[in-house]
Amino acid sequence: MNHISPDPEPERSTGLEPGGGVPPGETPPAESSMPEAGPLETHNPTKGWAKGPLAVILALVVLVAAFFLVYALILIF
Image (cartoon, rainbow, N blue to C red):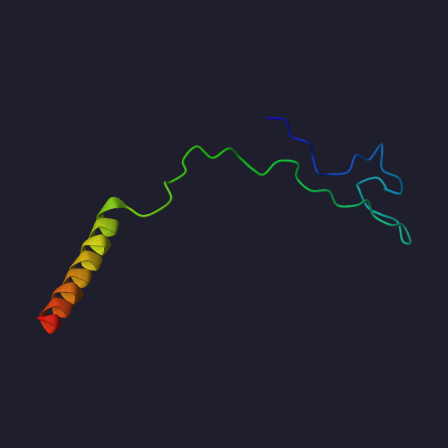
């Protein structure tokens, strides 16, 4: 992993005093961003629903649908 320091290089930046200060009236060097997103993550939890809660929800949906189907059939006959 290559890492580029976001700090300005004193030998290439104009207007920097020894110690990194900027004299009055001088514009400080632009702030740079990190070239990388961060450390490599080795553990990423799975996304989405677990099988247990999804099965319970689907069972409830089937039971409610069956209830209304039976209720509609009772009203018809």
